[in-house]
Image 1 (cartoon, chains in turn cyan, orange):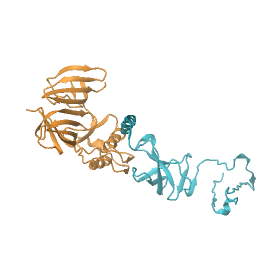
Image 2: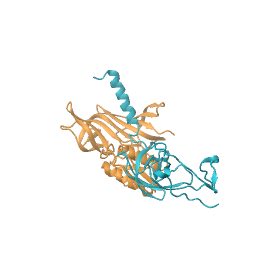
Image 3: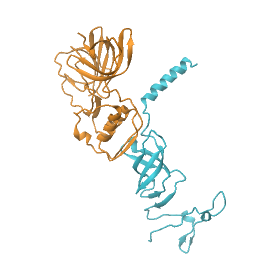
Image 4: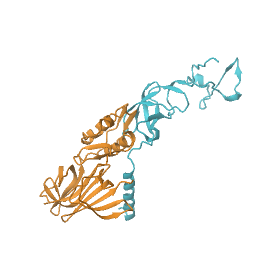
Length: 150
Length: 220
């Protein structure tokens, strides 16, 4: 049986809840990518209080960067400044399959300043921390890296 | 003759609350032989209000009811929907349709044609979603309310004269900007000007055949 204090507290919480929007445009919600056209995503949020959303601009976090992901990736959707006119997709979840990544920077440094140039190119070697096998042998390293000639 | 009637039955006591933004509502004791349900017309001298009984029953020989302006559907949950490059009229029409409400024909067409980049309706009370739409997409100074005729209006208030020649100020509360008024009936509406006072909210109180009106004035 609830005490008087519990009932007063429950009443106050109900008042507080009623003063807040039941779904919040200032929050971010997990959503699955179902389609991508250019840098716009169509997504299906996990939360049924949100609709399927289309043509959401990607906010990649890298200025000028562009990404192409396979359907099934998860992002967060939200709205700039809580404005329903300005939806966006941000923050990819781990596990997203990246089909391409384009960075427009004039210089991209791989491996930092200590990386040795061999035959004029940067070489890299990564070891899978779980198996100890080079990652290229596991088939999960990039096959192609394109760089603009300077 | 009753100052206010509900579907032709006299209102014994109660309050009719009329906000400038939102849904008007009334809590009334009606001298009716049976509970009032569904659509209800409140009639006062010169004014008529179309609403819906949202709650009530017979109690101590009177029908004690709460009436909400229009169809009383703005408390329903909105169906989530996303729009790309819609005009304001699209999410607005869908929200009102889901609520069973009717848009006022007096809404400016230019406002309805306002172009939005996108819009997302969330599963939340329709009235709340309507407020967000008006606040974030309709432009500066635009508000919305259910009019006396039960339709939903949005626009910028023009503050027309209330057209009430005979009124008396019975009291004033500067701390909350309210006035106690002596009027000859339920004649004052929000969004109008009484003298040099812009009426933001008014409440008509009926008790024992007497009418008192309290009005809150919009901040300058």
